[in-house]
Length: 152
Ligand code: SF4
Image 1 (cartoon, rainbow, N blue to C red):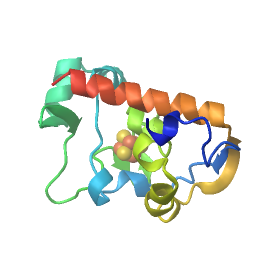
Image 2: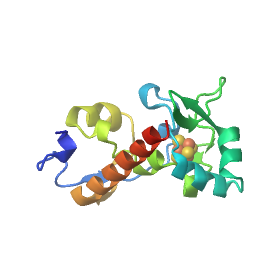
Image 3: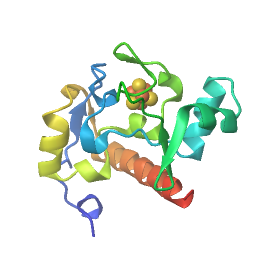
């Protein structure tokens, strides 16, 4: 059983977080560098760009190990859709961008400190996300990852 399934979590009283628009999670940062896009994400992004899903996928996406992600440029590893410090596709942004920082792989206390607190200026700002909200977001991210894997 993973920590996120246990009844007692270090985040049972909620977590204060609000995106500060730093764009840091949109610039390449190693392990979490890829912006993955499942079919639902690609459909939404295609509509935003007024393209068919296949045209959007051809133009903006590539596959690694059978999993779709937004293309990376050789000369600039930042997200293709980052415009200055802002997301250029904010209303249609991929699931992983919506669910950050409530990702299963960082919800263990040590990982949270290392991968989120030390990196993302949104922690400790804005609204407190309740445990119920966090669980819902975690599930959304898990479902998105499942969809990515099912496409392989
Ligand atoms: S799609 Fe937008 S929010 Fe997601 S990484 Fe790219 S610029 Fe950032």
